[in-house]
Each structure stands twice: as C-alpha cells, then as structure tokens.
Image (cartoon, rainbow, N blue to C red; front, side, top):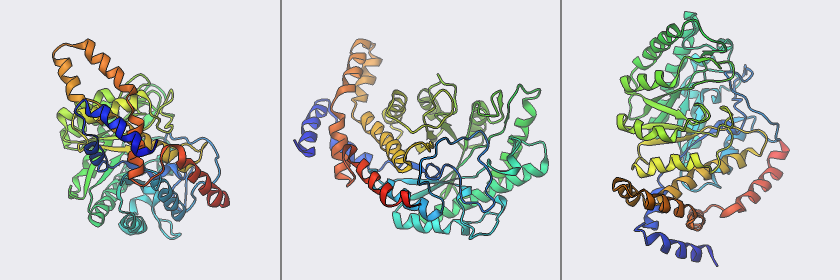
Length: 417
C-alpha cells in the first residue's frame, strides 16, 4: 500500500473520535521548534581565543566531521533542516559570533558579529533565538559569574548579557519574528555552602541591572533558566528552580524549564500546567537526561510524549516556546539533530491525535476505567501512518529513508573535513 492509502485508512480510525486529521496536520505545520546550533560543533563556538568547555558542560565522543567554521555549521544545519518537516528556528549562543579573526571580548559583542547568521536565516526563512554564553571563559573558571563576589567579574557578565539582548533585538527586527533570549549561568558550589543567600542576592541584583535596559518585546523576550545541580555544583546552584520561578513571575520574564535540569525522578511535564496558570508563556529546552544532566539526543520516550500531551491538551501550542538542547559527539551530528527534532514533532502529532476533550470529560465524571482504557488503546492507534503522510506532504524523507541521505552527506562532505 502507498503512504497515501495507509494514511486514508488510519485517518478513518481517528475520525471516529471526531479528530480532524487534515486540520491537525495544518496546525502542526505552524509549530516551530528552536533547533540548537551547538549539536553541530560540540559546543565549541568560533571565538578566536577559544577556551576549553567548562561550566559543568561535557561533550563525549569523537565522531568525525564536526563543524569547525560558521560556514560548515550552517551547511550542516541546512542538511538537517532538509530532513525535518516544517519551518523552524535556530538557537545561537554568543560564542557563535563571527569576528573575522579579531579578538572581541564577550561584553563587546555587537549585532555586526552576527550579520552572516541573520542573512543566512533570511535566505532559509528561519527565526533566530539567542543565549549569552556564561561558560568556557577565564572569567567563569571558578564556577561563578553573575553571582561572583568580585564586582569586576560580575560587571563583565552584566555587560555581556546586555550586549546579548541588543543582539537579540537586532535578530527580531531583521527577521520579523520575536527572538527568545535565555539566560543560563553555571554558578554554584561543589560542596555544602555556608551561605546560600548572599550569592542569590548578587544574582538578583545582576539580573535587575541586565533587564533594566529596555528592549522592545516586539523583537525580544527574555527567559531565565534554572538548574538543580551540575558537574562542579553538586551541592548548590545559585539559580535554582525556586529562585528563577519567583524572579520570572515578579519581573514578567519567561521561566525556561530544561528537562535535564531536575532530579532524575522529577517530571517537567507535570510542571507545565501549573506554570501556564501564572505565566502567559513558558519556554522549554527539551533534552534527555540519563542519570544526570547528560543532554542525550531526544527519543520518543514517555516523558517526551507526556510533555507534548500537556502542551496540546491545554491549548498551549502558542504559549509554550519549544527549544531543544542536546549534544552527542559519539554519533553523526546531522543524524542527532534529525532524530531529536523529528521526535519532538512526532510527540506533538501523537498528542494532537488523541481525543483530549473526551478524556477530560471522563475524568470530570469520575469514569477512570474508561479513561485508562482509552489512554492505553490510543497508544497503538496507527499514528505512524499519519506521520509518514505528513513527512511526504512536507517534502522530507519518509520513515528511516532520511538515514541514506545522512550517510551520503557524511561520505561526500563530513569525511573530507
């Protein structure tokens, strides 16, 4: 049977439950995923005075062919995007500036250092998101930045974050789509601190200074990202979940939830509905922690599916800004992007092909037997046939056929680097 024939058969099964599959696919086309550039070069960036990776971030593996220039990274992103259905966004860190061989300190970065990225995004029809880079730098070597007791170091990072917000505003103006600028810092202590409050006071004061500079929210919105622990900050992180949740709500900023930044048994999916009650928007970095914040490639596991369900059944596709954050140097990097992003989109499609309103009604009626039965039965409905048709209609490879294109690209491009 053809992809179309399989689709028509599957579609009938979903239509019995009042699900308009064609409408679902039209809606899915308009959901952008912010794809992180740093999978393509192992979070190295292009600084002239490049520092070793630090801040509790580690990339393992030495698969050949990683991008070492901006041109290579953009080329690789184009290849990955050609295998992923839909129109999406690309998420940049400040270390991906292009300074033409000149040493430019991070607090001196300017929109001109990202002109090539903006021109490329225009050509590709993409939006851009941004992150100041507060790691892999001599002024972050001791694990403290915006909460550092040294005022000079704090001031450097404050200036860097202000510069980053101005760059993001430039992105928004040039591309006609609002840029999300996300602030994450590695600040914390390896062992039990004797004072938890003072570093948090300094972080709050630093953030207040950064956000005091007015940026038009038509072009840029700000997010703050929490973490509970990390390498080198096992006992205490200054920017904890409670710290940033409180700060975001009080200061009208977005609170960004990274799925790898919580305890191994803590589910981010369970937080989304609560966050939506108090915030107009919520930001996500979807990753896959394996025993710790290891940023494995996103797979179609239970938590990913539950995250998608929480977004879809709460009518929050336009309220949750979905970004990805993983990096694996042990496998082909284009394949990593493709697998992870396709899985994020698959999870949203699967969630949209569930009779969510009926299941809500069953819960309100206390009919937990039918609720559980239907939730389980829909796990084996022919969602795969709908996904294949969507890929076909969007002009990207169906099923695993994309892998042949990646193998060919590796042979023709990556192996020659």
